[in-house]
Length: 270
Image (cartoon, rainbow, N blue to C red; front, side, top):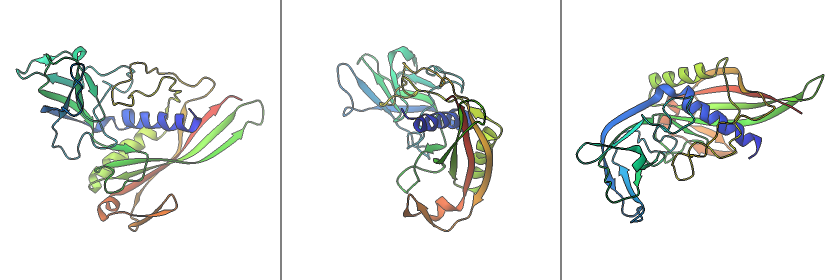
């Protein structure tokens, strides 16, 4: 994994699980429906959450909460509770959770999940410019761009600096301001761990928690420091230039918008 990808993953992990910690919502007693098309009896039975919440908890960039608190490196035990048809709690050892798509997977037909309580990420965190079908508001776009490196006058090692922009799109001014304040406070005079992800990220390719995940920082490198943090509300015209293409954005997506810019800096040995 290249350095830029590690920095991107480290930053995304920090924003989702630390800076936006106050934007975790909860749904209770939501019914589950059996998905025959996704199941593979007799070894796998898949049940889907029937949420009508807006924004949808399983829309892009959101998903169910998979750790109990920001400092955890193990799978949650208090964010998701599954019940049978009698309202009896089913032990977490009897099912797996697809945190991205909002599904419960059991390995036996004798276990029939009927309802679920769960917490989920209200703010969508993505790394691409939002278009109409990408996800529902609110959205935070992480954009890492320019890179600069400079060495020390004496000794080895160098500072690596990348320019980062967070683009915030919200339903209204109050929601925008709340999200911006949380992000700004999470960045100003702060830093996050620079992880190496030797065994992958917390969430695996199939949406399940990666039981092999290890919290390992990169040897010979400092934390990722957030410097020159600046927040500004955007009242730009509808037309925006993204990746040298013109992308038409709606009034809604531009009306309550903010941009936070900062430098992502770390020191690494020679």
